[in-house]
Image (cartoon, rainbow over all chains, first blue to last red; front, side):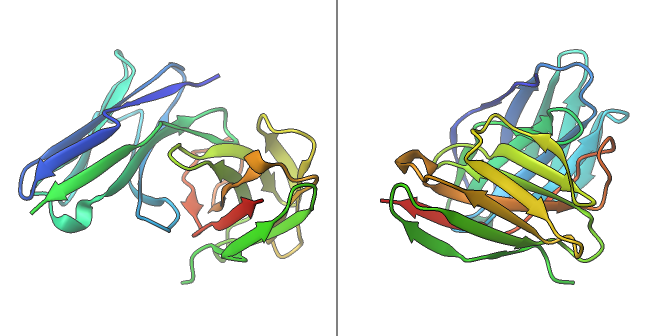
Length: 111
Length: 115
């Protein structure tokens, strides 16, 4: 089955700097890669996703890149703000019926 | 539009008891999935239901069961609770049928504490 590895587990950046979180997956047939943001006491919120037919997708300050050959994908947040502080999860399909999540990255934005 | 809703928000039970958690998907979504999130970890898949039929099951014991109703809402039942069942239980809905992209939208979760 699919296995997703995520790193780093914690990340601290200065406000205004960029943050990058990386994930690797094991199943070369996986074709959909979402990123979720989870704030304290809330459920995961889908913030961006990418499908296997593209290499990069941007949405304002957030971007995701995909390298199918190396089987890894990354989340890039530019011009970070205090409200970006949260736990971020990557995921990949574990079969059509489920998502397999990474272990999470706790991002802290320092003012 | 309202998002995925779950009830109750918090629940405290003792070992051996039974619990029922409820979920209402986003309007128009026919597929509901359940995940367990233990503190400090990513969500783990428990079940998926589509059109009232179970379409996927994760690696959880038979103490865990679920069902989906004609209005597409869903219940997750856990029998003979163990301390290790303490977790945030998340419900997610998707507009897609099984076999297509797995874009899923999560509810706020039910925090279950087993004493």
